[in-house]
Amino acid sequence: MSDSLYERIGGPDSIKEIATSLFKNHTSNPTVNNRYVNSDPDEVIRLVTEFMCSGFGGPEEYTGKDMITAHTSMNISEEEFNAVIDDMMAALDENNIGQGIKDEILAILWSLRTEVIKL
Image 1 (cartoon, helix red, strand yellow):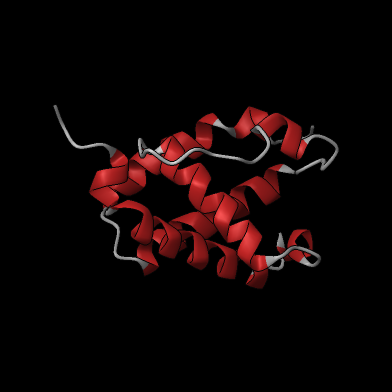
Image 2 (image 1 turned 90 degrees about the vertical axis):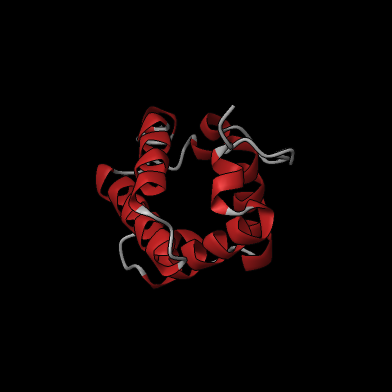
């Protein structure tokens, strides 16, 4: 049996580093930074880390809201969704994640599109 995406990335510490880079990228991206003005960075990073660990095959339990509940009434645009994907790809680059893993993560993100756009 092949290693999970979670294991291939390097487990929770590596995933937390990616989540931290992602938060930094979001807060410096003019397309989405207004979404994070009143957020608690530590809480966002904790939840994103849990979400990725759980979704990538790790043992961690995601304690946040499901994607539809979390994004309902946010009216997220296509432009914002694409900016989030760009920020994630940059975070993966910043953490030296290879192209094969990046492609897998891109597919996962794209599969969540209908759970976050224009709800």
